[in-house]
Image (cartoon, rainbow, N blue to C red):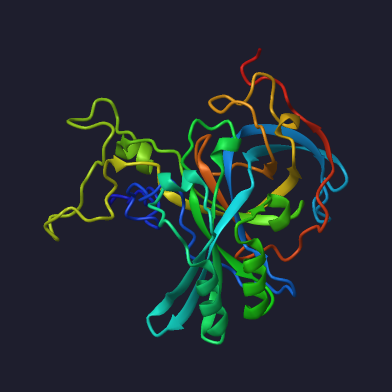
Length: 337
């Protein structure tokens, strides 16, 4: 009898190569969906991950076998202090993609912005706005530059995170007027999203440092009597081609990669974070002091990580309009105190 070949499926996905550290702790959104709305609105927001708990909610998906029953759901709590809109940025389309046309900054930006970039002494806001308005026919996208306000949270940092957020809906003229009305003002999460809505969560995952192939790729651990290696790959490949292929699982960086998770549901948007802070505070975070958001399920990254939320790129076809009824939210101490 000939040798029967064992089935040995590929270990780990090659979809995310190269698995190297993200450039920045703040994720970068490369795609903004087109939304059909008469009035213009911001398409994203930035919050900070505080931790997780669980809630009892009434299942409101009609097709679910548990429809109308009480179910337990894992909940992620985000602290979402208001964003300050510092600038308007206009883009024009060129054969080489989008190109920045002009920026209009607010008159007196907060001092914290100095921690991120060098601020000029005086901004010519009026002239820049006039320049954008005069060339609206050439402009294809209008985005705002927003900064977070970590001083209003329990975070031990003062340096704000800067995010560029696109404006969707309406015409370019309406979008420009809307952006102009926001310049220098703050925006709350309830101005951008509504309860029960689905969002995409874009964040940098928890870093795990340099890890071996068993943890990083899930390769099989070899038998203990084997020679040389146990927690490695049994073969690095054929004699020819005479090199180790990139498809072979090797040790290296694991975690701290940018990931997008689609269609996470917002269960609640609240104003006072003390309503959702467990006894003794969230571990490694503390007390949620200001506005907050409850999101169903887990999201990438450790506590304190800045998390970007975006209008869904591929929203579910059937989704309940109203938010589900929350019967009970666990505020028990995660440390058993």
